Image (cartoon, rainbow, N blue to C red; front, side, top):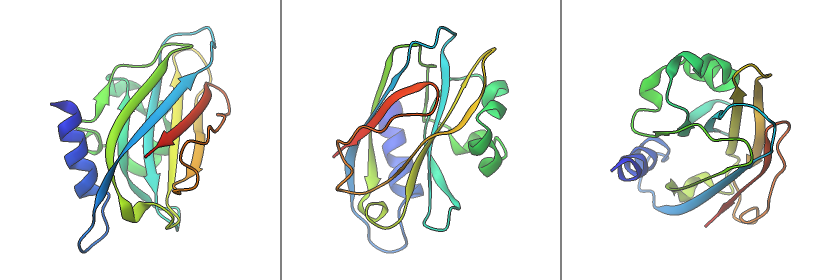
Length: 156
């Protein structure tokens, strides 16, 4: 049910005006063994001008910790309506989060960027842990994170 709602939200929230088609995109985020509690991750997209375009997924369910996902929080003001229906559990150290969502074709090769903010209790926050342009050519290419993400990739 959750993934169906998430796909519907993404195809409506992250499509450009007009007729748009979408494709399933699998995003894989593997965390390092950082030795702490589970990480909260916010996956979101910015447009070619750097403005917030929408949230894709939130790993971690307690909204009181969302303020530690500082870039996502700055864009959204912590508004939980941005992530209703697209949340899951936090991700443990050394574990992998794999999600498949429908993303509008118009997001690819058009200057949009996928971002991941990360936060771990009693450890440093990591805004913009990963920032990767959404391109068809970049699919399948692992990207290293700054602190908690060992690697991130997406496949179509």
